[in-house]
Every structure is written in C-alpha cells, then in structure tokens.
Amino acid sequence: MTLLASDFDILLTQHQASFEDQGLYCIGCGDPRREFQSKEILTMMKKPVIGINADYKEAKGNQPAFSVVTAGYYDNILRAGGIPVVVPPLDSEDDMNAILDQLDGFMLIGGADLDPQRDGFMMHPSVRTMDPRREVFDRTLCRLICQRRLPVLGIGAGMQLINVTLGGNLFLHIPEDLPDSLPHKDPQDPNHRHGLIIAVGSIMERVYGDGEIRVSSRHHMAIDDLAPGFRVTAKCADGVIEAIESTNPDWFAMGTQFHPENEAASALDARIFEEFLDGIREQAPVQLRVVA
Image (cartoon, rainbow, N blue to C red):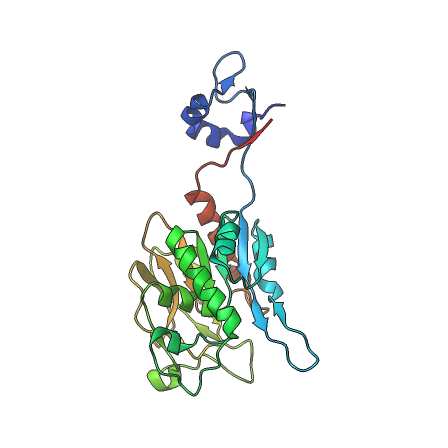
C-alpha cells in the first residue's frame, strides 16, 4: 500500500525532514511530490475527535436520572468536520484522563449556574445551580483540560468555568452588579439577541468581520475579573464580556458567553465551530498512524 503525495503536496513538503527521519523515501528520485512507500504505511489527516460534557438531571419520582446534550452542540461539530463524543459525568480522575488522552479537543457546554460558594462567594438568590454531580465533574474535568492545555471551547457556563478555573471570577447577577446593562436574558424569548463589539485581530473578528452582529443571549451571570492568560475578544455594548481567547501561543482555548449552537444562531455563528477545529489542526503536530 502507498500514500500519494499529490494529495498532500503542501503537507508533505513542510514535513519532508520528519519523513526522512522515519525511513521514508520517494520511489525512484527522492522528490517529495512523488509516491511515498515504506515498510510501514502512514495514514494522515484524521478528523479531530471532540469531547462534549453533558447536562445531568437527578432522578425524581418515577423519572430516572439522565444526561442530555442539546443537538446543536454535536451537530455543529459534525458540520465543521469533527467527530463529537459525549462524555458522561465520571467520578475518577484516572478515568477522565484516560478519556482526554483519546481526544483532540473538548467543548464545555452551557447549562445552569455554577455554584459561587465553590469559589468562595456567597450564594445569590437569583442563582439556579446545576446538579452537583455535573458540577463536580465539570470542575475537575476543566482543571485537567487546562493542566494539559488541551484545545477547548467553552460556551455559556462553559466559558465561565474556564475563567474561574484559571483564577477569574464572575458577576452573579448582571441586573444588580451592572444596573445600567442591557437585557441579556428574556424569559419570554429564548432566542433573545443583542449586538457585539469585536476586538481587532481576534478569532471573533475572523468569524464575524465588519458587519452588524447580533448573537443569541440568555444569561444573568457573566465574567467580572478575567483569568490571567486570556483576553477579551467580544463585548456587548454595555461592556459585558461575551467572548475570550487564550493569549498563550501553545494553547488554543476560546469561549463565548452567547450561544452559537442555538436554533436561532446564524450561519456566521456556526463559523465559531469551524475556527475551533481549524485551531486544533493548526496546533497539532502532523498525525501519523503506523499500519503494519
């Protein structure tokens, strides 16, 4: 079996030296644009495998406990060219690490509120916490993701979780903490949208360009102090942080407070998932799998 270099001209040219180090050679002339062959066959360019956490609901009455993920999360990963893998709330860090070893990136989804008491803050009456089993898992999982610098996209509570894990904190109720703010949640309209102000030179600028931007918003908590190693890449006109990204060149990490997976999301919103997968591909070394 052989791998045709013509299918991967740029890739093969860029990585010719590493191929030679592994004993690869071009049939006849050493030209990297010709057919490669070796005692082992190399398969390259696999689809990124993306982990997704899930919401969790405890058993009530005759209803059993269950996990659920809104289809927009995994459908957008599929459309962007990835393979989504839903990860249930595990108890063991060893099990979490075993799963993370198999993944190219992770998407932390939205949901109910993080418990501020876990971060040393008093409970606010507006806070509606997620199930403790999910929150304990999510917090441990996020710590492990950050420690290993696995590419990550956080959405809604997922972005807030990245921020608090790395030393930031949150406004617990925007209407009280920022009384002059715009509405960020409308109980009568699950598809409530508001505008964005985008930072120049950011991933968000690549996604949305210069046109008018309106995104799906349904939150009452938001980032207050931003975690070290991140920058703000989008704000609402009232100053509320709506998107962040890592400033570490060795770690592709980003988050949105708004919900690009929402049914009311636009085609531009879906490009966030494409940028996430592109970032994973650009950060990862060329993937080579030896086949006997």
